[in-house]
Image 1 (cartoon, helix red, strand yellow):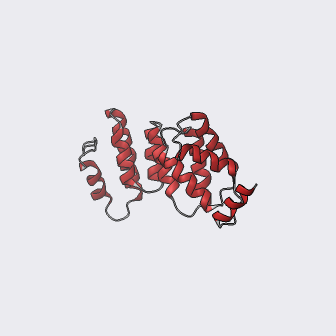
Image 2: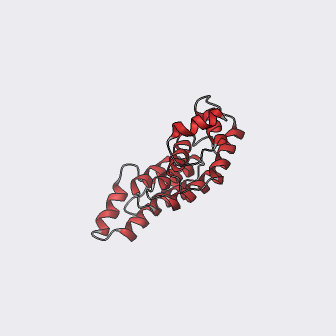
Image 3: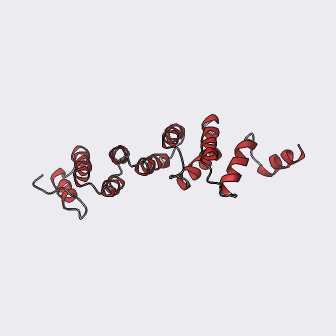
Length: 173
């Protein structure tokens, strides 16, 4: 009890301390535990807490960003969606794209990047694929997005997309 009171006084915030969460974070960050069960448990703890807390939002973002390859992708995407809805910034959208790339779901990653109007991120995702037909399909999605969203000079913008160094699209396509 004495330790808990000291911890609450040290934190200087009005958020109720979740000691189980602190301990699991300690095991993962300080002890460098790679136990998948512990990582799943941390995700379930994050899911059980209210998303309005900015300190919790920062913890979730930091955890997901540093452990993209260790997390359950479905749960992590659900957390990104939940925290994106309740936060002002769009950092969870970019994190969602990174999770989709990590799970090798490139078509959804490109679509997610285009949904936040980040064509550069979509191009990076499209270039990850070693499969030429898939790359062409992804770049076609990017060109379609540019065509639908460009207001000034659509023709010039499409030519730029086709002439990019990594683009498998040619003007004949």
